[in-house]
Image: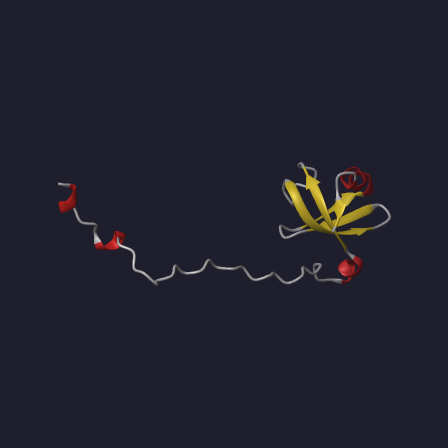
Length: 98
């Protein structure tokens, strides 16, 4: 009885036919700081945010940082913000310069 059953055509494999290759992602261009004179000397940092900067959201962020005397400007893909230097010193403990 099992011999009477046939495989449907879509289950039969064709010899020599290769599966399509997976899409390979192109390497993204190197990120550049936001436009403007303020961001000319910006440094790239990987920062862990937990609600300190609501404009940027929470979690690990790759951000551009410009340190001033009292304030630090921070920007990433989500937007820009200005935070006090004291808060930046706290965030810098868990941050890594990229």
